[in-house]
Length: 130
Image (cartoon, rainbow, N blue to C red):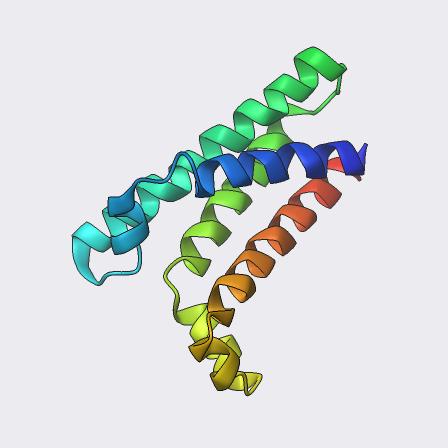
């Protein structure tokens, strides 16, 4: 069940991060102030809804039995971690700590960002499958 849950959450993540993310959200989700937080939390909410819909599809189409309370907890985890990671400073701090300044200058931050998001999805799927 873990692999199925992970794939469902990953597809939800891809949908929320690419076709369902507006240019405004992408450009302002790390900004300081209310407008930045609004863009960030709207984007994180898109992840919550999209991943929730994917879990619902898994329940209806695949017959997955996912308890609503753990599912809600997993979805909140996904939204919260996504919002935190997308503030961009956690990725920048990690890359500074890992001495990856050169890679950051060549576009590596996007890869570290996605790795952090996918790790959060992995943890959510593992918790749901346990």
